[in-house]
Length: 184
Ligand SMILES: CC(C)(COP(=O)(O)OP(=O)(O)OC[C@H]1O[C@@H](n2cnc3c(N)ncnc32)[C@H](O)[C@@H]1OP(=O)(O)O)[C@@H](O)C(=O)NCCC(=O)NCCS
Image (tube, rainbow, N blue to C red; front, top):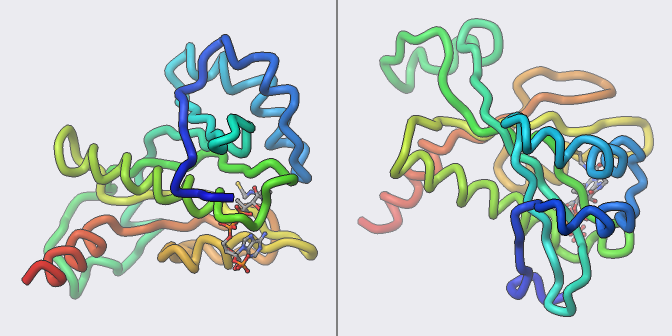
């Protein structure tokens, strides 16, 4: 699949029938799409973006909301040497759900949807309001450990867990630092 040609649409009620066609090995990720994505969007809880291949196949989705990272509990000591920050928490954008249809897995769709989320966070960070991190809970069980997928994209674990949801973050400031140093 040519992932440069993926198209995204903000979830709308016109997509309802399409939501049922989504096939995902993680049942809760399919159920969320059918049962919760539209109501949550109406209630201001999350916004879902649907991704389509250039052949107009529905290949994946990402649901996004806001979050904050507690600097005492979640990232204790993180800013001690790096920056003089004295707040208890810092704002974040959270990837609440992210899933690729099983028929299109391992073709780069998940990676593109994470890049899209980073792009969105950088737009917010650069133009609209504070947004220091991207957060998410990666799924880990005996068969599947998605932390590897997110680590490849620069995310770090902030609460190690053997199974279940593993909380991870990406520091957007470090990314902007990298960009600045590339320009100079
Ligand atoms: C995990 C998931 C989002 C990855 O998306 P994808 O489009 O299949 O992944 P990509 O093709 O972009 O993968 C890029 C790289 O990430 C790594 N990767 C992808 N899926 C992985 C997984 N499940 N476990 C470990 N590493 C993984 C691989 O190194 C892969 O490169 P490779 O295929 O050349 O080895 C997708 O498979 C998915 O939706 N899985 C089911 C639902 C789920 O577990 N979602 C995550 C929790 S919300």
